[in-house]
Image (cartoon, rainbow, N blue to C red; front, side, top):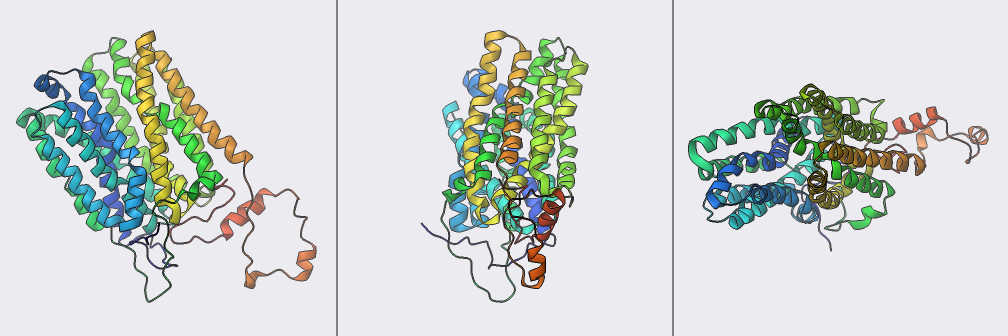
Length: 462
């Protein structure tokens, strides 16, 4: 299979780290917001759907589950489409699908039809927008890429805070059908964001990149990618569990409904600021080479917050939990794709992210339901938080220990202008001698970045 990537310029195109890249960042911010917030925001319509179709809450909850499953599970399909047609055309089609699904859902006469329209079609449309937007962001930013990833990731909590009250307002005024119809029109903004994804063009003529596979499975030969995929799959088992159960946890402690719902507002507000801050810190010159370890710490911090949250015995304790969970959750959200970009590089990122999302889709469908079954069996929320925390902490240890144990120093390309003299070569230490940390730091700083891609280093690739 072959096919050139339409939106990648000739070899040697340098990421502008600004300019039109800020428009691309804005588009990615909006797409990320819709992709992650929309499956949660539609939950405000569930009571109306229950009344309309005479079903239970668990039946309506499948709408959000299908949306998330499509967002994660169609990763390889998105990779194939991007590698064949380019980011902009795929996103334009995705925007139309996302809008069409919600518009069609407003005319549905059964919950099964809502599953197919608002779930499958809209979910596929969001997936066809989310993945290409991250790929384009990777093309346009190199030195400032961690900060750009953090700002783009902030779209998720910002849109969640906006879409939930908007959905409630639309339901109160126009009912669920009118609300779905208006939200469908709102999703056409994904097409506007797609129009912002202008392909990078090289000045003058140059050799084109060779054609590549539509889905590059060679990433599985990269130990860094395999380690990352395994760690994040375990992480996702517990990552989304606490936000699902924290409100019910508060109500079980006797907290009024309005105060209990406010916990998610606290979590989302903290998350808004945590993501850009984490991106800024990860972009610091002395921190960026160690982004894998910062990501591992973020995951560990999140798991530790879950374990501590299991001991909360009153509303104040749950507020403190939401603050620390929001910080750690924001750090994870800002760093997860930045680290993947650093591990696999620009050319394999489109395939790598699709495969990672597919693996995480399985964990997304297993995690919250398993927490629910544990709660049904024990009726103790503490055990649910302990399970989630244990899973997240385990994933951080997989990433940290795997990176430490499998680390390898890659040889540098010889530089003619910096070639060592014969005397210097004679005085070089033996090849099997231990590597000093200052030498590693010099090695990391000496490697140039190529077209938005951090060259693999001992700290970003295992």
